Image 1 (cartoon, rainbow, N blue to C red):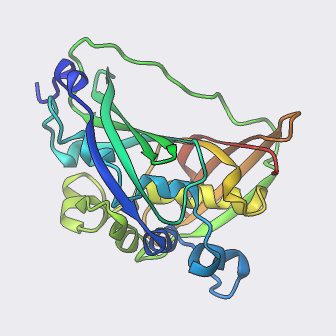
Image 2 (cartoon, helix red, strand yellow; image 1 turned 90 degrees about the vertical axis):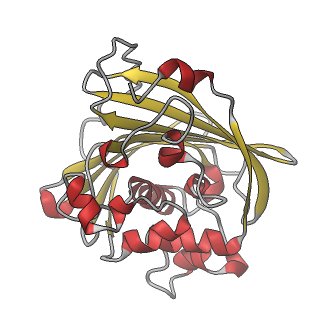
Length: 294
């Protein structure tokens, strides 16, 4: 079996040093669609180094990208074809505000292997800390089609339930540029699925698809800009499931429901769809947990 669950789980964490600066942050922000209109003060806080605020989802690419999806497929006990791999979900917990430049230690390991029958699911956790302590914890869920069925544990659903009844509190739309995937991949995810038409066809897609983590970042930016007054430091946790593909050139529609906690923080539930395909859902079970205004 290409996936040996026992070997993958027993493997020691892979530890590496990651370094980033304002140029990496700016490139990431442009890669998820920030900077338009180019003279908008709200956009310049993502694009201009003199007033730079770091969107927390930058953590998924800091230092050239945590091992993430491809990293989970190159460790002990795992030997699979990239064309059979799908990024199933992502969860980020912030321990402190992500700085615009930093040097940190990232320790990654497979913490769970689940048998879904027709697919295997690997959960890769990366803990990142600098000299001052923990910065963030990142978890990626990786589906490998055709690798299930060995009788292993199916794993928890981990779903927060349906979105609230009634109309959303806010709706935002984000256009995805035709070259968005080509720009986003410069932050470290070189999977040819997002750039090479022949590889995309072999994987069963009509053309290269947008990185799920690009949609992930664009969605968080919509929530922060729309409901948190652009204050990136208030984000404490962010998670989603990737349920469909986005093609460059399409439009993301982000519906948001806000629940305010008595102490002033709260959560935002979001539903993300593609407008041009009858609101086909592409991100589900999306939750942003945020702290009170400082």
